[in-house]
Length: 489
Image (tube, rainbow, N blue to C red):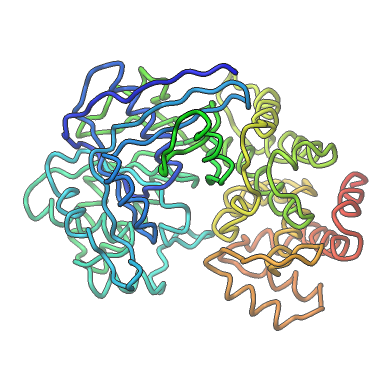
């Protein structure tokens, strides 16, 4: 076994970045880049205040108890890894709801930190649903109860957009230049979509504030890539065998990529020295990753989960599923991309399959399957609409849509139940209840949801017919039958 152990560099307590979304991905991606930057440069001015906005108060308290230090194990495979200690987080806060039902324990401390002139960048990993945007139109869901609460009580925000609006309002009132807002979530044009959410929410409060945000606040786009599965007992046991007993540890793959639009009026760390690609236009790389990596992940997640397959590793090592992913990437995703010269999409697809086959990771398909309503428009449907408009079929996506619709039942093809984790879960349950065993009506109803499925794609008879056919086949003949139909298409 080949390993490398790297200790964290002591910090100074100086905080220049606030991060919203203290989850595993942030700790294994952005924080690692910043720790490496600190190690190399000796620049300690970019410490991080990380805030958890949801329910994991334990993670915040555990990090505080550990002096804000934790470990990241980066695995190339089960025999080759690097173990890093991360110390770049200087403060951890909690603004969600605690076990007693109370909101915002550290909200005022977080807002004060964001409003401080020392804070020059605010980054986010709050998942697609944390922006409260309509997946199809990109508009703010002002009728969502959380957003409605922020509109009614703007100085006690509960959402990421609400926190950004309140902090920017405080800076505006104090005459302090705005921080840069950097989304690190898997959304197309994530900077533009973040701006949309923040500006539209600010319009409910003060049109002049909204105009200032729209004109003066930088919202660069970014693309992030690193596979970071949820931790399992086996992961903690593996680390304990190495002498690491760390409740906050994260296991991830060795590969990591970060592409960032270089627009930081208040300054930034010299990330490029650590391999971050600072570019003028992130869009081609962002779309490539969303449609090829994330799109194939979702395809495997819904088909695999229905068949009782637990992990990406288990799924990609089944010949038929591996062939499906490669076909989808090269025949349906890659042709929709407009990449700079020199980008080898065939090589990229093959590298993704190799990464999916990393035997050191247990990336659960149920984790990837979460929040499908928020993910599928950018991962599958936008590109599929472009293909439909050009008269081109997308049978892999049609199969994926059929699998997703069947997945929303909350029970796999073997009869095993699971909890459907999606902000539209209640709506899906109502559709299943209404249409019962009428598969054709059910599929039609799902495809008619224009806040998920583009209306032009729902109106494409060839695509809708393919989804209907695959749904019926999944029910009658299971995954093997559906893959056989796909092979003939």
